[in-house]
Image (cartoon, rainbow, N blue to C red):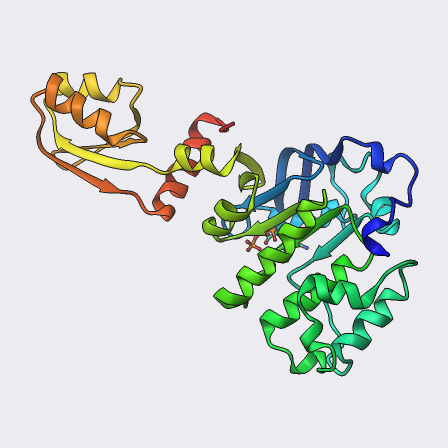
Length: 319
Ligand SMILES: Nc1ncnc2c1ncn2[C@@H]1O[C@H](COP(=O)(O)OP(=O)(O)OP(=O)(O)O)[C@@H](O)[C@H]1O
């Protein structure tokens, strides 16, 4: 029975960390022969039982990192371990399951036959129960090729669960799913984390990170630029922009305030990014002669841009 199976590798169950990346660098050579650094000194520790969201723009290095955790590619520098061992050993022992963006499925097999066939590769696997856990039992007799994109993602999830892995790596797992399918998918993932499984999922959806991750790791240009709980990250990257006309003396006072994360001047207005717009408004009203004060929320895109440019100039991380 898959739920009660113990890790196949002695010592794996005792290891406190599911995965550790230490100063990992991965470079590729582009088609033009130029060197491209996809992962640039990544330090990351996934503790057992955590659900960690991996957020970042296109090309940030998320998939490359997942590939290294799966042993599909190796770092040029640094070290990656999964349950204290080489990733490929952990994968070989069935400790790691993955839903990748490009996982091949055989379109002419039914869902049930697919799970039975792949289940035969893992001693002790229970395809029926795995289909149930992944929410694909109703699709058992349907050909994989006749399933929608979102359904195929759930089939991939079922396949990932076959070996009863202790670490699940999900690369944009809900791509192609509608809202209902997303909810059902995350409910199934939550069941796995409840059992103590560690989950790392790459996503472009801040809401998914917010709702389903214990911890959010934000990456940009192959580096971790923010790492913390969803709520701490939200506080760090959400916020408002307060803009006003300020005299030079008032501008000096406000931009030097710890309430102001970033200040820019456009035209005759100072734009002040803050996590506490109420306190900043009080400061402006009570202690300066600011005029034409406006408060505007920042969009997620703006906050991400603000955070990435901040990381570029200061190298700072949140935690
Ligand atoms: N095999 C490869 N050969 C050359 N360049 C590669 C290769 N794999 C990835 N890259 C490049 O490395 C960078 C990081 O890519 P990666 O796929 O890891 O980013 P990502 O964060 O997963 O992006 P996305 O959100 O678009 O999936 C990109 O610039 C990409 O073009």
